[in-house]
Image (cartoon, rainbow, N blue to C red):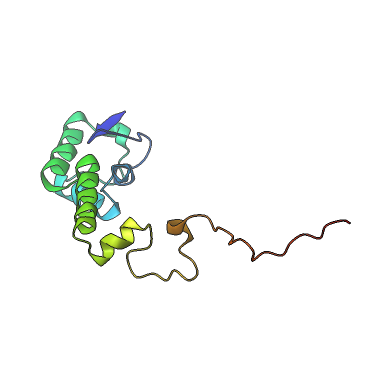
Amino acid sequence: MARISGVVIPDNKQVQISLTYVHGIGRAYSAQILEKTKIDPIVRVKDLTDAELSKIQECINEDYTVEGELQRSVSTNIKRLKDINAYRGTRHKSNLPSRGQRTKTNARTRRGKRVAVGGTQKKAATKT
């Protein structure tokens, strides 16, 4: 079990894929890290030595913002937008898409489950 930046990465996967389990590292950053540390990307994590793992950890610590620090900076940026009442901040406040998507249709993920407006649905026939 290898730990990088406080995240347990899978042992049976290739290093280039396993590094993407760390929040803030995708495929491109993973490739850059392995190129800097001169580690073969298709080697399995279980086959890495402790020295190679520490090289990867050092490279991530000095060059990249990951995990809690990244999440903190993103939430700080969103809070700043809300505080200055920027348009994007008001979209965040009201749980609407902030990057220009349409909301007349779609946007269900951001807006939540559809709510039926009272009186618009047909009433069921009653037995009399």
